[in-house]
Length: 545
Image 1 (cartoon, rainbow, N blue to C red):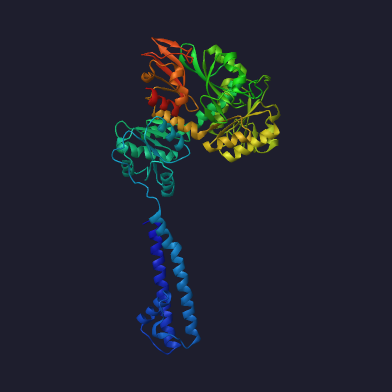
Image 2 (image 1 turned 45 degrees about the horizontal axis):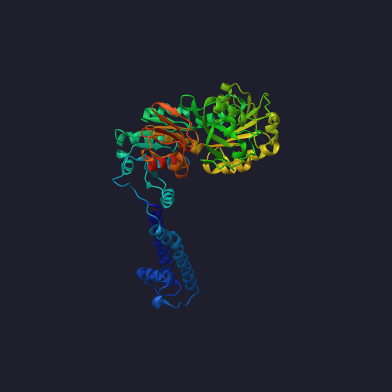
C-alpha cells in the first residue's frame, strides 16, 4: 500500500468515526432537548447532510440553544474535514495523475549496456565517460522522487530496487556488459550477490567501496573489480606536491621510444605565471607540444594562444624526456626554499593518510592537522582556526593539502589560508564536481574532485578492453588508423578544429614520427597517435576512421 492509499484509508476511517459519534449525540439531543425522538438512521442522515452541506431536512429549525450549538459545531467540523481532504487526498491524486511516469524496465532490445546502481555524485562522471565511448547506460534508482527528477532531466533510469533480482532482470542485467554497485559498502555487497545470481556469464560486476578493508568481502560476494577511489585521490593530490618539490619529471606516459605525454602543473612564483601561452614561448624554450591545458578545472584543447597561465594551470604536453624536463623546470617556483614542515595536510581520513603516505615515500617533510588525536596527527584542532594553522607551521609552509570531507568547510578553509598566508599553495579535494569552480574562486591552486576521479576510475575499469591510455583528468591517448584522412595533410584534415584532438605522432613502417606539423601528409597504413578528451577522441573515431 503506497502513501496515497494509506492516507485515503486513514481519512475515511476518521470521517466515519466522527460521523457516527455526531449521530449518537444528535439522536440523544433530539430526544432530550427537542422532545422529538428520531431513529438512529435518521440522525445519521442529518449528520451526513450537515457535513456535505446538502441541507438539514425537516428537522430545522431547532428550538433549543443546545441543538443549535450542536448543529453549528457539526457545520464547522464538516467544512474542516472537506478542506482537509484537498491536501490529503485530492492534491496528491492530481499530482500522481499529472506527474512523470518513470519506466519500471528497459526495452527488450537494449543490450551491452551498463547498469548503474544507484544515482550518486559519481554517477554523472561515469555516465559521461560511457557516453563518450558510445556505451549505453541505465540508472537503477529505488527512490521514486529522485528517479522522476532524473527521468525529466533526460537520464535513462528505471525506478527499481537494485538489491532485487527481479528488478535487476527488469534492468536487462542478463544482456548487460557491466554493473556498477555504488551505494554503500553493505548495500553494494547485497547488489553484487543479486547480480551474480541473475547476470549473464560475461557480466562484469564492479563494486565501489568507501572502506578499503571491505574489498575482500566484496570479492567474496562475487565482484570482478572492487574499487576504492579515496586512496587514489590521495595519491593524485600528493603527486601535485611532490612534483613541485623536485625537479624530477615524475609520472609520464610513454607513447613511443623517448616520446612521452605528461601533465605539468604551474606552481606559484613560476616565471610562467601571468603570461599568455603565446608569450610564454614554451614551444621555443622547451621544445614540447602543448596539446591541452586545465584552467581552473576546465579543460581546453587546444588552448588559445592568448590564454593566461596561472598558478594551478595544468599543461598537457608531449615531447622527449629531456624536453619535458626543461618545461618542468620552467613550471616550478623561481625561488625554491626547502624547509621542514613545508607541507601541511589538513584531515587524516583515508585521503589524508594516503597523501601522508605518498609524502613519506617521497621524503618530503609535512605536518598533519586533524580534529581527532590519533597516531600520525601532529596538531589537534579545527583547521578553520588561524591559530591551529600557525601551530602547524603555516607561516613557513609551501603547500597546504586540504582533504576534508565537507566541501563547504574546504572552501572556507581555503579562504582562511589565503588570508593568513597568500603565497602558500593550496591543493584540495572536493566531493562534488560542482564545487571545483568555487574552490578556484576561493583561491585554491589545484583541485581534484572525488566524484570525477571515481567516475573516471569506474569507467576505465569497464572500458578496459578499449585501446586507450588514461590520464587522471579525462584525457585519452588513442592509436588508430584514420582511413578517411589518407592523402590529406594535417592542415587540410583540420583535426583540431573538427574534433578538438591533437595528432601528437604517427607510427609509419614501425617508426614513430613526432615532427608532425601542418604540412605532414597522412599515408595509407599510418597509425595516428591522437590525444584529447573522451568526447574529442570519440568524435575523431566517428569522423576520421
